[in-house]
Length: 171
Image 1 (cartoon, one colour):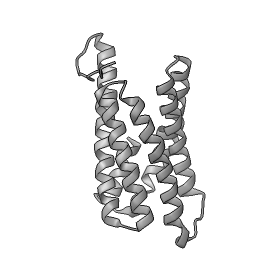
Image 2 (cartoon, helix red, strand yellow):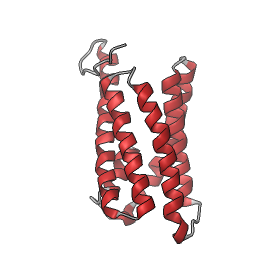
Image 3 (tube, rainbow, N blue to C red):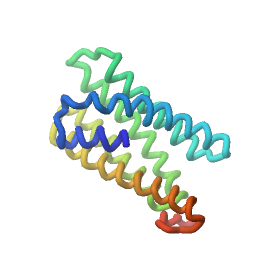
């Protein structure tokens, strides 16, 4: 949900002055709730899920902090934010390699999230608004895939059968 809301803003569907609407989601839903989910994944001995949920929960909390509490000088903001996003892109890229052993939907979420981070990083470094819009659309696709994955997981668990396929990857 947090990725969707921010990506809609990045894609230019709503005014960038409305970015404040994502801060509550970033801190509480994308941040704290996702971090807590990661802790439960660690308790269930799921290294991939634990690392993914805790890391992206920390990403959203750090994003909230970056946008609400830090005061980057305008001349340095693009470089600083670009470096921040590049680092997350690198992390997401190697998580994509690990995601190949999960299912097709999770793998695709990570593929498109990787593309989103790199597009956002290049946009921040270059100041390219057009690439920022592309990143927004990539983020929307990422969010839709993630929503489908969570919907399928919850629905399949609730119905005790495969209602919505996740397409396990070859092991």
